[in-house]
Amino acid sequence: MKEPQKFSMSTGLPVSKDEEVKHYPMNKPDEGSAEQAFLNFIQKAKESKRKYNERLEKENKDST
Image (cartoon, rainbow, N blue to C red; front, side):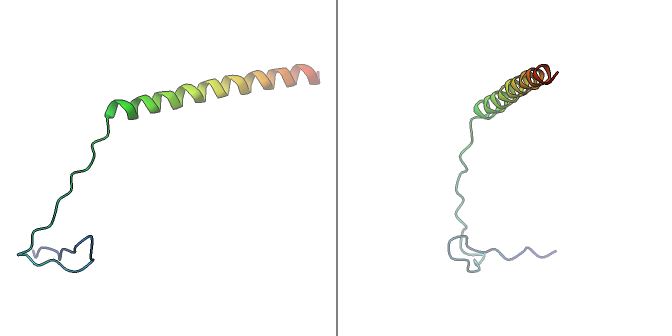
């Protein structure tokens, strides 16, 4: 099977096999911060739901 044609990301032109493609390291995100952000999101959602339920209960008491 033939290897697919490689293209330069900066110019968009085909890269010959003789030219070396530059490899840029990806910034590895701190896994803890992503996990913490997710946990914070869950906590805020729970708090929002609690406030919403309290408001619903208050509206139901006022309407009866």
